[in-house]
Length: 216
Ligand code: MD3
Ligand code: FE
View 1 (cartoon, rainbow, N blue to C red):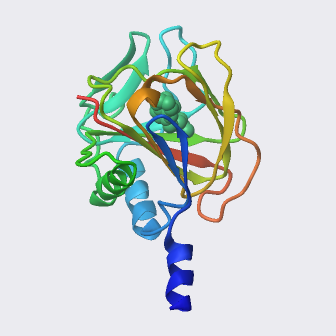
View 2: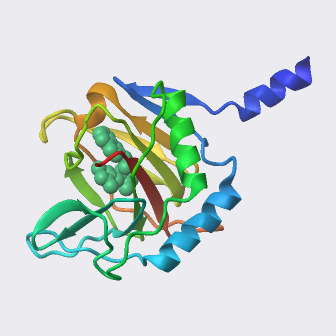
């Protein structure tokens, strides 16, 4: 039936294969958005966003917090995963069921069954905040994918190669977009250009990125 086809078309997220093992699922996080946003608020209330310091002593422009069994932290001693929030001394907030379900469903769409993340890093970008080119290498098992969810103001993501100097391609990430990074692409260099001024009804000036990992 024509109506059914139309609705299928509207509900079916646009997907793009970006590189080996990497899939962009446009708008994938929009279904169940209200619950996701409530759960996000609750996590941030328990473990507030903060600007962590790198080993060289500079504060990151991105504000961060975590939920799940493990959280990514950096301080003068360097990068690591830790079960405790250094600011509160307490375990990180429990990973909400809505977060776990979104990450598992996205991973499955990209061909990774049974993805059970134990860490969700929450990155908050305000105008000007950026993330320089880097690799994600602090996890135990690189065969596990990473799922990232973009919310709020759009950002330009840079996807590079396997060496820092390799050329990069720009990818615009909008509210609700989800990327599953797996396979060979798991160790590609990547970063985020300084956030431009923008406005989103629920996030104001900000972009929030949720990054789900099996870290331990
Ligand atoms: C590409 N965050 O927290 S997540 C990070 O938008 C980080 O906040 C970015 O990079 C952000 O480490 C992007 C997307 C991401 C995660 C892992 C990757 C992209 C990746 C691994 C390989 C290649
Ligand atoms: Fe990264």
